[in-house]
Image: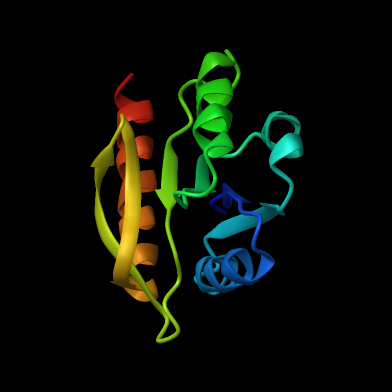
Length: 133
């Protein structure tokens, strides 16, 4: 039996975390943990030991860049990929995938199914890299 991949959702908006978490959990491949308080994000990440961190990256939340830096400065978490999320549109879309400031991001108008597939691909690439190391 394959173990579930651990994904930590760090988002001050429980609604966005719940929608994204539900979409990921519905695949049966992930164990999801949500943290809605930025000040507890590093502690939660250290305790949960995720394979991937999804971080709300809204422009009004400058402390989230600080959280990402703290995560990557920690030896136990420095190799954990951080994917930054932006807003959730009312029609269930999230946005384009890319890189910004050294982090992967998902921005406006992206279907949840596409995001789930993107995360699955990222984690399968991570598995392949770990197996070859």
